[in-house]
Length: 77
Image 1 (cartoon, rainbow, N blue to C red):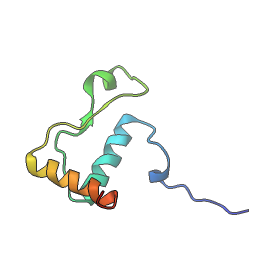
Image 2: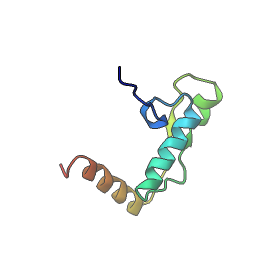
Image 3: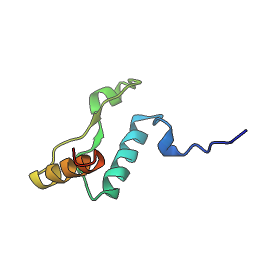
């Protein structure tokens, strides 16, 4: 029987804060910084099990870079 090693990236985030940190790290790895990335203060403060993640605002350059990275991941489609 084969053993499969599960990494943090393979399992769903357990908290909104963990999800934000994972997203922040993944974006940083491709050269993108969303300074306003955070847990939504309303749903996060209520302890909602599916708190929203606020991606925040970004400038034209960051939006263009994000779109390019996503297009590249789709094979240029």
